[in-house]
Length: 312
Picture 1 (tube, rainbow, N blue to C red):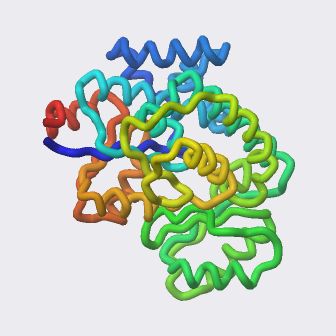
Picture 2: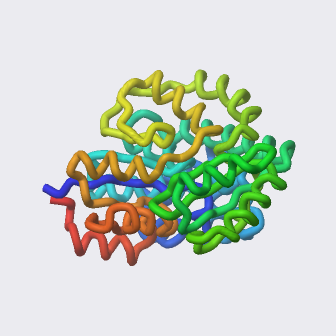
């Protein structure tokens, strides 16, 4: 039997039209969107299916939209009998992963993500922060540049070999980008279109507000193995999961370590569940000998079932 790792995308994978085809084709997917609309008291389905893109890109909308699309796709795979051996999610994607692992139900995850997005959006509005991708530069070299710059700036995402993301105050981030662009080895340095300095100390107010919300939600025992961002390692204790979800708001995403931890357990078949192929690309660059497919619409679902059948 093939063992799969399900990986779930985070902010940045959104696009107008996501989930529409699956919702039209599979009642079980449509029911997820209906449930989200009812819980939220507004039509997140319409925003996913029709946009406008400007609204979909807003942090407060993006995070719940991606969660809903990912869970709709997950429900179809579960219905087809495709069960993961381990799950992980990139930043926001951890909440989809926790649903897949049986820790959160969809209603509670929506509540958490809605609050998280709101608080992160507010923190982004209060602080003058941004993020930038640094490609082709070793971690130590980038950290040395960061150490030369005044102000708040940190490595926020360790995505894969040669792909790092920095986060912090606008002036500090721009200075690091300018210095990194002059260094030998850096292929490309580019600002990211984000509304705040995510996974940095500038999100501390969001973290503080989120504590009460996360403590008010019931977390169930794990039914599937999970690897979390902050450590890039397996986590089993529910209290530890809560603590790491809080830390994740201001701590870096250790995605390269996450993928390596999964591969060390002998799991080499990855399925990106939800919109986009961002994580599929990171798997290919981190674990070139692994297999990865994404499932986000009828075509990609068909390609997956043609390849693996029911996973057996």
